[in-house]
Image (cartoon, rainbow, N blue to C red; front, side, top):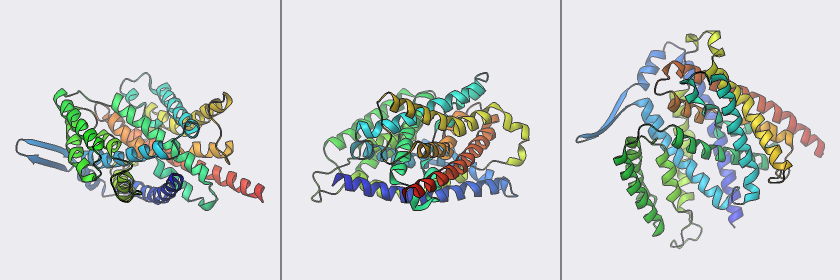
Length: 401
């Protein structure tokens, strides 16, 4: 029964993510068109629009772009946290054997890209802040490319790509918490700690209504926003306490976490992520000379995502299999793993998000270079990954006849 539920969740997830990935591509393309059209000034003015929420003397004032990046993306991270929790408890990451191969893939896909980026930028103290940009994978974009290949893609390959992306997201969460935290406010952190204890109590006493968790989750987001820890992490923390199962509910199949995940997923796939892409992908290409693409930031991101991802994933997967601590998933070949590894070079959403954190202070001069690098690497990885898998899957189908 648990296996059937896990398989159904995977199928629903992949179908929704693939469609969302195609919409994400359209939103990014539209942002590029607008940013390089007569509407460019209106686009910038719109994103710089000041938005303020105030209650008495307490207020939060940010430009619209930061409300999107800090607020809407907290909903995205809530969904990521719930997916991670579900997969670890009853999904494709619930056993060491299932989790070890994609875990090593994700580790290699973070270490090698970061090393390549640092090789280009170690001499520049500001540029080095972007070392984590090429470590990310955009699962929506990657699955959108897989969707173009149709039913020929084996479910095991989709599950592998999804598992790598989940570990990748976990790594991104840790990186953001450890390396992209501003000056801390101890008072705000204390408030956040009290709210987290409250969430733990709700979970411990079997509260299943999501509204109860959100009553503490929203103040937690505000507390983390004021604390210096990035506010989007509130979504991950909230997800960890939402119950996966409910013994009190008369319907034994009811899952508070799964119900909330299914409710939020369309809003994130078709709302949050396309809005984020439109707000962050717009870069005025006309403002760059050809020589700008040779800058260490752009080269480090392109080299890290396009080359580092596939080299790192293949290298650590091969080592893990060679020494016997992981096994190649049943029904998959190394060529198929290579194609998926190339698709992992589509960093896009998470890379743009980390770039906004890396260069929001003191790195304004690199704000366009990072987006150019991310877009070039993501497009190149998507195109190459598509054609590699198309040839590989066609050959595999021909050999099975």
